[in-house]
Length: 407
Image (cartoon, rainbow, N blue to C red; front, side):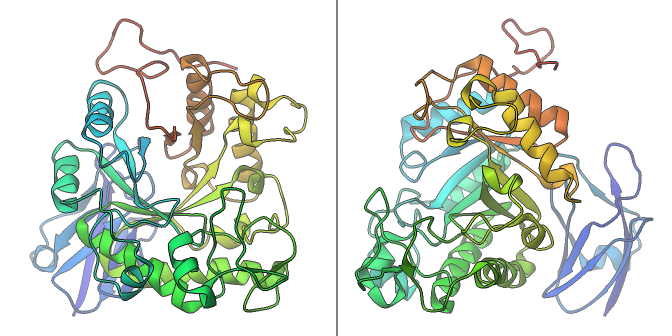
């Protein structure tokens, strides 16, 4: 069957160009007038566009020619909940309470965290083999997602990909090795899996599919890179070309397999990737990432810019400039502003003078992202401890409401 339709913006009522339309495994884009035609099998057509909430309509709606399909504009403003944070009633409820009273409207949840553990029950054989499912912090994941959606909260599933200590330890054949043949372990003593290995690809994409089925709006892959250590051994020879092919290949496979679920796809990248023209020796380069993912999420924590940026050698003293200039530099490589959603620092500096990042620094970063025109922003605090400081409160004229910074 062939179906035709028109997609419009819910606020402006104007056509939405380049919206992504899916029917089963088939993908098309809307034209300049917001029109599309798609052929395939299935009961529902998925629609999503940058800067909008995703939507799904029955194919019967299109048969009846009931008018244009409306996509609601939405700019995610998120905070992060770790693998343990989502399982802690105290931390979870504090985060949701903060979302309720501030401009926040989204949450990033560890589905597979930094230590390789999966938050919800899964029947994947590799998860059983790696014992990565023995502790589940989302015992009723569907109920959590349903609650978020009931409260109009955008739900992002964070999946840590190649940094995977349980799997690399249980299956040394899948692990990154040192030159001696021993399993490589990073500064946290955690092992990594080989980014070239198709079995590792399949494992992480299968977790992403389970998250999509639960109802997450977006899949965000983190540690989707090679480890940044010299002298390591992989299943294939490594150079910039092979590293780029591995990372873009994984993401392209994930995008293909996630197509039927109409979820947004994002990738976290090093902050310096927005400046570097090579792959930063980890397989990440903007030119390869942009055609594959919906959103690129650079980690623009000033504390992580150990060398500063041009004109600013002390990054923690200039959070606004770090965020704005890094994003501006990335945009000059032909990628629209709306394709970026940066991670911002909401934790104490650890690399320079150990200053606290209070509401002032948080608002400076938010203002920079807003001025740039990114599709929102995300606050990172590994302890999941957030306050309203630096955030706009709900309603006009609220006391202590945060003002945007003008540079």
